[in-house]
Every structure is written in C-alpha cells, then in structure tokens.
Image (cartoon, rainbow, N blue to C red; front, side, top):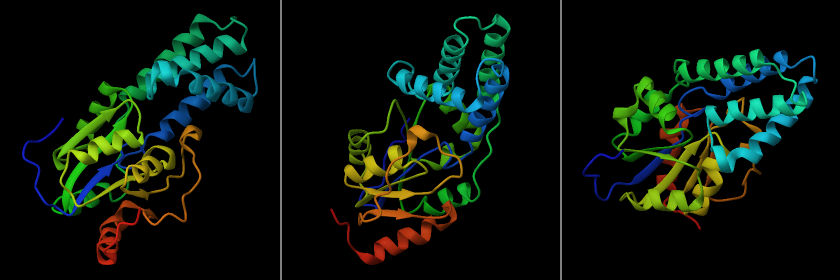
Amino acid sequence: MHREGFAMGREWTIGFDADDTLWHNERFFRITQDRFAALLSDFAEPDHLQERLLAAERRNLGQYGFGIKGFVLSMIETAIEVTQAQVSAQVISDLVQAGREMLAHPIELMPGARAAVEALAGRGDLVLITKGDLLDQERKLAQSGLGELFDAVEIVSDKTAATYARVFGRHAGRRAGMVGNSLRSDVMPAIAAGGWGIHVPHDLTWEIEAAEVPSGHPRFRTIASLEDLPALLDEIEAGGRDDA
C-alpha cells in the first residue's frame, strides 16, 4: 500500500518493524508453545519439544514463510514426529484452534509506539516494513490504529538487504533508517543496504531472529524504547555524518 506524492527532499526515510516493535506479538507464540507442551507432555519434555519445534520452523520457513499459519503447521508436524504418528485427532484439533485464537487476538501497542510515530510524521517518509502472512499483518495494522500515520506499508516475505535497498530507493529521504527489535531482520540488512539500523530490544525474541550485535558499526544504535527515537534522530542529524 502506498500513498501518492511522497515529500521530496525530506531528511529521513524511516522504516518501522511491526511485531514486537509497534505491538506485542511473541508473547502469544510463547503462550501457544506452552499449550503445545502441555498437550504432548506424555510424549516428550518441554525443552525437547521446543528444540524439535524450532528445528521444524527452520526447515519450513522456505515453504510456509513467517507467521502464525506456518507456526501451526510446524507444531502439527512436530507432534506427528515426537509421537511416532500416534498423536490424536483431538490434539491436532486443539493446535488448529490455538492458531485461530492467535489470529483473532486483539492488538496491544508497545509503550510510546503511537507517540513516536506521530512525532516523526513531519520529519520524513514513514514506512511500515513487516514480514509474515499478508492477511494477518493487514488485520493487525488495521486494529492498531496506526495505519493512517504511515506513508507506505510493505508486507514482504523476508527482510534482506535487497528488500531495504528497494524500499529505501522509493523514497527521497537524505538518510534512511530501520527501527526494530530483530537484529537479524531489522538491523543487519538495513545497515547492509546503506541505512541506519536502530535496535529496540524486546524481552521476548524468537531464536531465529538472533544475530551478533554490530556494536562497532557507525550506523548502529540501540534505544531502550520508541520514546527515545526522536532524540536519537536529532543526535544523528547533529553529527552530520552517515559513515559507510
């Protein structure tokens, strides 16, 4: 989705991640994983189930992509594996129902999310850049009440340096930056594309999103919350450099 007529010559193109940056998400996956472990407690210990589920998710990303639907399919696959195909139809039904509940869960914004986006609306083109299931991401954005604050929305299959180069290239900001909780998806590829990677750590982060902190890179910054973002952009502008 795009609005017509981006402002020319603006200082920033600012990308925002959605899940666990603007609103809570991972906590619902953890609740469902606990439910999954309880359903299969007769067959495997929780830690072993988590390892098997994570392995299935890694295997399946190329086919199912990111999001709740792929997560549910990976849970079902893991349940079949650990029970040696003895899992009951009732357990499969319970896992499908858990996925439906996740898809229907109301959105809860992160502290300071709306204020931060509103504060930056006049400083550049704001772009929501999120990956996952198209329908689910559109639902969450609509429920968040933030949609009208963004100049563009990009729902992508994955976030790579090429993704960010393409998105940043569509806008006229003199500087580009990506704000998000994932080092792997939000920070590292944005830096590789020539932008700033602004990390907003979250207490719960999916293991697949882990990456080494690029602490020595001149275009990497960490902030404690989105409330600190406007001041950080002031600091970057005052420095007057965008080091390669």
